[in-house]
Amino acid sequence: MKVSVLQKGNVLFFYRPKVQHHPVPNLEDVQHFFMVLKPELVERFIFVVMGRKKLPEKQSFFGFVEKISDNLDQAISFLSEDHYTTSTSGERTMPAACCIGIGKYLLIDHGQHTDLVYELSKPHALGRVQKEFHLKKYGNYLITVKNPKQPAPRGVGLSNKQKAKYPGKLQNLFQDYRFIPLNPAEFLEQEGAELLLIGKTASTLGKNNHEISMHFQEINSEDVLKRFEKYFPIH
Image (cartoon, rainbow, N blue to C red; front, side):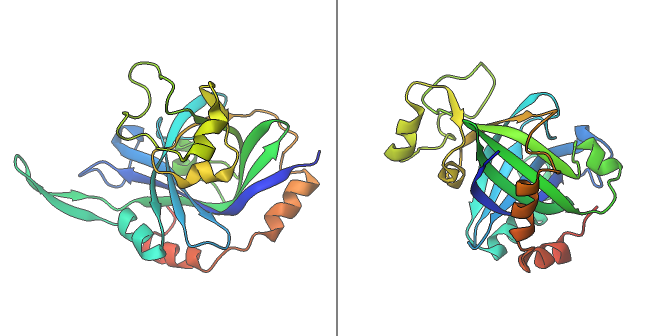
């Protein structure tokens, strides 16, 4: 089946432990789990936080674009350890994020849907930490984007202040729908973009699909990943 690649590049998976919890023994001690998308040929890093602190399998999980960094130094600073002072507890430390996987990703227009597909290159063998976050050697998800002008169930999603304010050409694509396929990829360039990832148990976009395999081979593992590994070795 013919597919259209909307965006491709490198992807990194991180978790950030809660304050004073490091290393992480289980999800209860995790503050955030997120993936960092580095589109090919541009100096941009897109931080997508997953609301359930792991990737979906057969479920659908909420996520959102927390931050967009325009250069590597900004991205590294965002992931690094931070020290701050509170009026009640004094000086506190926000632990550095921990990298648990590096690979390549494709954002694909496919049969009136948009798929996010990734393929891990490191680590070569998945351990307990990767399995805890449902990270696999190959993953495939339907990905949709939520209309910020449509209501969400109580307690779900971002506040109105946090939600993306899309330019007219993007907002008009929603019409009156609550969710639409994430197409074009420009939706990911908006902090506060609310996403829904739906795990797929079977797909024609599987790792044995020749066309998908060729697209992955065309993606270069950029030197920037070596910088990330220097500061954040894979757990």
